[in-house]
Image 1 (cartoon, rainbow, N blue to C red):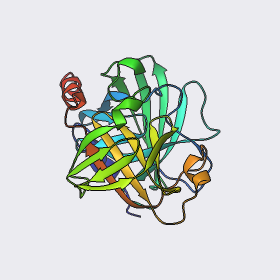
Image 2 (image 1 turned 60 degrees about the horizontal axis):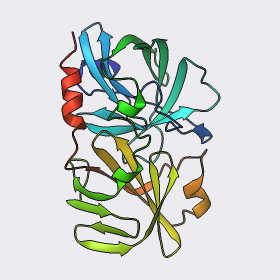
Image 3 (image 1 turned 60 degrees about the vertical axis):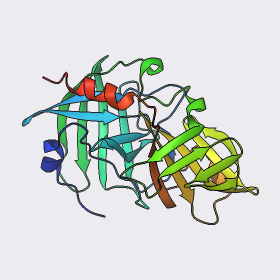
Image 4 (image 1 turned 135 degrees about the vertical axis):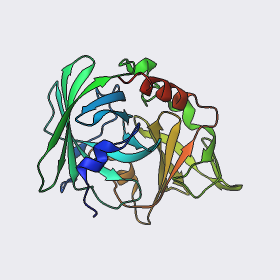
Length: 257
């Protein structure tokens, strides 16, 4: 895996982010009964000036799109501290960089980036967005209906159009008869002829990710609440063409001082 240059990471603008690593598969999903503390738009207070950080329940955004999966590390969290493993979209394993969110107030945190084998880098951060998950466009909680309907491709996909219903998956005009049901908060499992074929995961904001399985994934693995599937045949980021969250995020980032 490629190493991460922390200085260059913090020099990125708007939706920059860095991310996590691990060797264990025993984890707790980030998407729980309500959105976690980290979900939202943040101002990172770096030595080089303010930088934006955009995070949904499941993913950290980069260059305006969902980029890095977040997996909360089991057994390391209390009311204020949250440690994460991460994985870059399209990779088959964890990224060798850890992050920690430490809540210092209702709208503030310490944000620590810790590349494996290197000195950790910590900054303070202030929330720019609404913390209440019911009002946050980056939250995935309670938005199951938005899975179904039309989606369009992004720079992180090689498809143009996708439509999902409870009985059909259509990609660029080619349809498959499927069964779709929620297997996690913010995640649908897709089955064809009784066999799991993928996830459709709410990436937060205006986005979702179609994750097609490699052969051999079982129904039990698709529904497992503790062990993540990390290696996919493909991961396609799609956008809701009627979404308004990108505009809201841009508005929040303009408030940086």
